[in-house]
Length: 214
Ligand SMILES: Cc1ncc(COP(=O)(O)O)c(C=O)c1O
Image 1 (cartoon, rainbow, N blue to C red):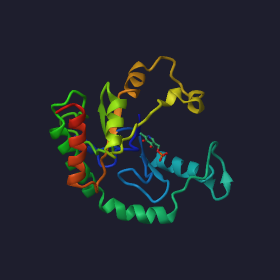
Image 2: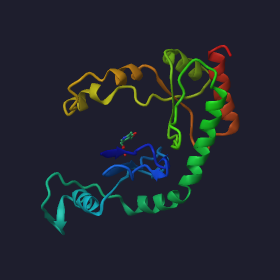
Image 3: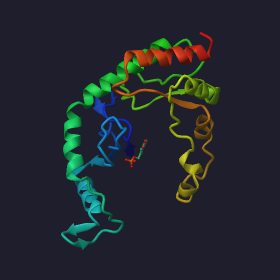
């Protein structure tokens, strides 16, 4: 199992942090992520053997200096400046995730009675709330309503991967992904970031409630 933890730094399944569950876990340090760099970056976690292979692949497939033995090697090192910055950010990751969870708690409580689906978390697990995605049949109308109130929202993502021409060629799905396609028109990410203020959260709640006449 390859875990895609790109959005999930700081999330747990029971006592286990994401990335520790599968054979390999892949993290993204894209700047907007919970643990974001000041440029692109990422990390792979797994067994020592697997990680050693990844180390070789990220440096041209070298098994020894300047000897490319492994196919599909590339130049994909995390540069030192990013690593230094991420080391500092790692120290405040738990606080940043807690801040996101506090915002999510407000949305979950203050929007609970509205006619749409809120994110759900299985008992015993913790959500890192990189995104706060609701599902509604009135997604586009709600999005416009919020935009008119100068509240930005996001679509994560507007097109499923298997429907994107540049990716479809490598897509290995032989079946229709009906659930993915159905969700594509319903998902909406509400504003959520560690430094959002209480007043900003209140403004989002008020605008969303206003849209549904509550
Ligand atoms: C769920 C998920 N997987 C993978 C990626 C890719 O991460 P990166 O851009 O660091 O390669 C992203 C980035 O947005 C993501 O959200």
